[in-house]
Image 1 (cartoon, rainbow, N blue to C red):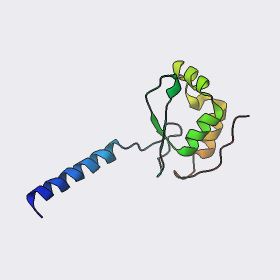
Image 2: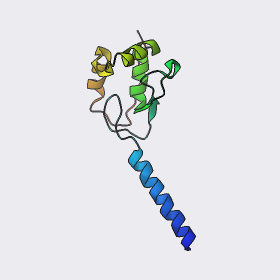
Image 3: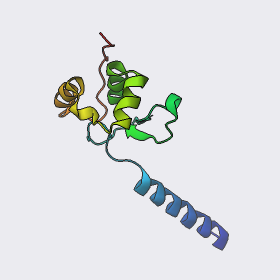
Image 4: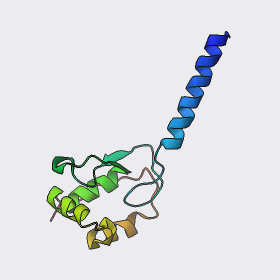
Length: 111
């Protein structure tokens, strides 16, 4: 292995280490460890000018959008209301708490 190849390997190892350190480890909604699938949620909807994204489980992401419209989410973000304080989400969080990070189940739509 030549000097240039060793540098390339060292550079690749550093890049992978940085990616692992910056990779999210917990879901923004439920706080459980993230599994193999990660989705990104805009707390302030993108359609309403939101740019910040947070990592969530797919089931958590679907639950958020099944419970709230973009208008609801925008109002809650502006008022700094925690989603965990909402009764529908509180019930979901109790139910999902002990599940495996890659757990998936169908999500009911809005009533």
